[in-house]
Image: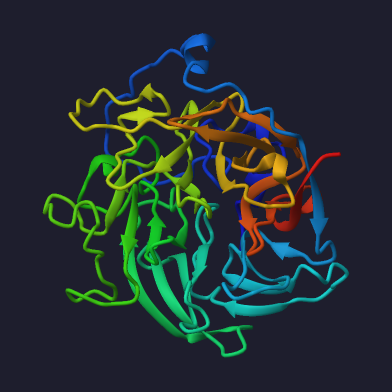
Length: 426
């Protein structure tokens, strides 16, 4: 069922330079239309690159403590709690199409239960396809709603839908699915994405550029597609024949050149974005093409440059008058091959990491940290390296504690996965 697992093995240093969030090489797909050869850009001197950063924040090293060691998850890529949860009950998302109910306080548990199983609806034959993200309605339990973003086949497409949560909060009814939004996909890679609710109560959704390589269809700068965008919708209402409404303050709501759902554009393939629970900043890890990975701060109406730019550098020879927003952080391929966006640490039990954005590289297993100071980030610092783990995601519990989610090594490399709690190293 999963023919691509071998490509996600821990021999990650041999992967293609076109690696993406959950894949070790770009898939073999039908030949895309011919595009201009990207401009060759020399790496700037270190003094130039480092001048983009404030001095390092001198963050402490961290360690990872495994939790639920006796439970085996299949390609886990996300972990959430219900908004009203005060204990350790969590929902672990498995890429093939299941949501597993577990309890972090029961570390010796050997069994878990399935809260939702939609594997028959989910296409996950490609490494970047599958059940990719979920979000609980912030007004739960008043609104017992789960939002799900996944890949489907025949035709190949991405779907955002809504399911009803049972009264006890332990399961979701598969028959209750209501499809809110569908986006056709030309290729199997660069599906994105993350769905989540913002502090404003609206749902945000990131989608990749459609796949293949180099953005062959020009979706990055095309305002008439959801691909390569961050969307913002109101799931509490319906309007204009849609299963949702368009917030009146969306940046392009009165500009017919753009789809009104668009919040930001020019992102290549965001793999995890999250709001800072303290100030509402929206952070995103955007996977690069050939040379650079980047961390962005997503703002209203922002254009993040793909495929005109990759990181801080020119990528395409195409001319544009667009005002482009540069990333906060860039990593060349010697440091990262597929960025995994994380969280700003607000855990009162980790005061030395307060305000630090914690993120990782899927391939190398490295975890980095940096702080935002004014309009610059501090120089990224390596906090931890776990070469036996392919880091697929981070999780923030309701008490602000942070966890790492990843695919395991060994014989089942990339198939099974585990969960680790972040702690400051003594």
